[in-house]
Length: 258
Ligand SMILES: Nc1nc2c(ncn2[C@@H]2O[C@H](COP(=O)(O)OP(=O)(O)OP(=O)(O)O)[C@@H](O)[C@H]2O)c(=O)[nH]1
Ligand SMILES: [Mg+2]
Image (cartoon, rainbow, N blue to C red; front, side, top):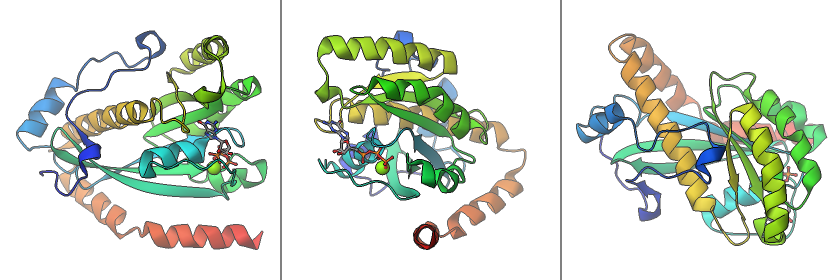
């Protein structure tokens, strides 16, 4: 399937590099050769029709929503508006000329929304734990967030992201990074520092995240193709008929009831 109608800033042709190669468990330097061949021969099966799921978690006000808003809409809001329960965005990409869709779930950090938010962790292909580089205390909760958010997924890609890089000096950034990189390594996650305010590293991180997700999704598709092709067709029907906007509306109503 050829990618069509994707904005130019959502086209990925080269495999993006990590923030720090020493702070990543993902060592590949390029898309998998099988993935490249499948894309160039237009034989990626159902990848273009499926939606992969990314989930952002982390303490209150660390900057999860700001990161999503910077990437998806290229905007930044100085005022804090707490996320109520969960929110999501859908982003379409063209990767190696193949269409790919990522559903990004932005969860609330506030404890009172924890049970609502955690019901959306299931089946995540990517888990992103966000902390605040200017609030070192937020580093100590990274592990707990990662454990909770990955418990109901099979082998998700894992990222630890320090935000608000614009607020800290280089030395302070380095100190917080060193601590967070250690945590990321113990969790088998890739580490990034960025700023939603200035936009520094936001696109690089997002492209890296999406590309690794795409590579894994195509490999999964290639592995399973031929095997349960009928089953896959059933799965796609379910995904397409799952009206996300209705669910989002219902979710908000449920939140308002409490
Ligand atoms: N200077 C600076 N401020 C930021 C950055 N990212 C977020 N903020 C500010 O930090 C506050 C919290 O940001 P949010 O993105 O709402 O935080 P959140 O993690 O979504 O919070 P919850 O939804 O309550 O969990 C807001 O006032 C943002 O403007 C950044 O990169 N730099
Ligand atoms: Mg939020």
